[in-house]
Image 1 (cartoon, one colour):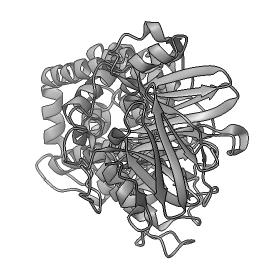
Image 2 (cartoon, rainbow, N blue to C red):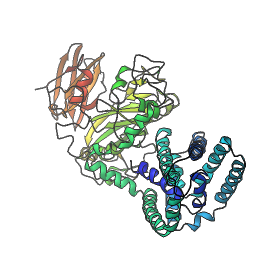
Image 3 (cartoon, rainbow, N blue to C red):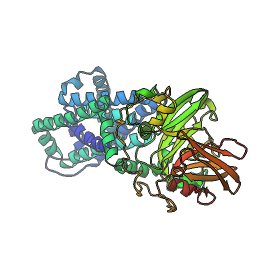
Length: 551
């Protein structure tokens, strides 16, 4: 939302550039006198074609970036540096006029401008407007803001910023065209005031750019998250969803008429095969941050368990494979939700959804090319929706099922793991490797952005049904046995306990030793399991799930 409104302001301030002021009489149109207040058709034609030119010019730049696989780390630096340069240019405007490429584009535009003036007809007016597009874009340094925000963003978000900029530009030009030479004189005569306005705006932009470069913008984001996760559901997401409906009166995918796919999902995932979609996708909603807004950790680093500095009561997902033991503490998983890693001989994704407490480890070898998983930014019944980076199929986190795309109907294999405190990790596995806080992302891992959520009965995104058999946030151990989903309240399994319980398809054995839980069938075959809050497991398995109560 912040960038969107700055985009509009950047468009408005474009007309204050020194090299733009001499061009404003062209916008006024020869049919107006100094005292006449009206907008001539000539002015409207020029303003319309100018707006089209700015949009097309920018989208061509955007299209060129879509052809190249550019990492997010580059765009972070690019945005920060570009916005910082914009701030400096607005504070010291002479810098801009000395850039060779700016003068080259401006001179080229001026030649087309002269050609348009020679054609004293409608066609000439459109030529004038089209030629003014590159001139207005490059002559005014505020256009740098659009470059710095549109190119790194997804197409939908970038288009919104661009339309905001163009809207601000058009509003200012319409005012110029309506009030005529009077407003041009006032702008010129008050150039000192306009310079002060631009310098103030430049300082604000400079601060924004430096905050992106230094990562302070992420600290601000963390503060917002810590003050309440719901605050991150911003106006931008609503705008994206609204714009997502442009060009189509029907939200249903043309190749899958029985499923109503949220328009924002189709815009965020244009490469997904929506012809294969589960009806549960209709309940999908934005969780606030967009695609990869919660960044998965793709290149995890590790430290020894003894180097873990947070409290020993910190929960961690623990894997023991091929003689390698790795622990993934919740204080890091809460901020990233997915860690793509190799443990022993297994390519895995360690996943955690803070809103429903679901901790699950999946084997990625089923996926072609052993692709990684990312956070889509969407939720279904408060449970994270993941996506694979190869086909952009969407996956339900707690079930591991592909609910849309090329892998539709496929289910990822569970990998056995434990949920232990870091104190238990240090006691059981003193040589364990623990996920390092050096993730490549600037987060305060001592803070919990969802502090108090797990201890309350309230929801940020209420489920469609809330079974009150157990407290909504009680952690359940969930598993499938002979295709029957079952769960056990985790706090009912006592240390050193051994239990034999019966469900509709047979007996299972449950035990706990040194904090580690084992579930097996009557033949001794281990049954993999995961962890999930009661409300989330119940809403997904209310029709055929079975609960084992050890009390």
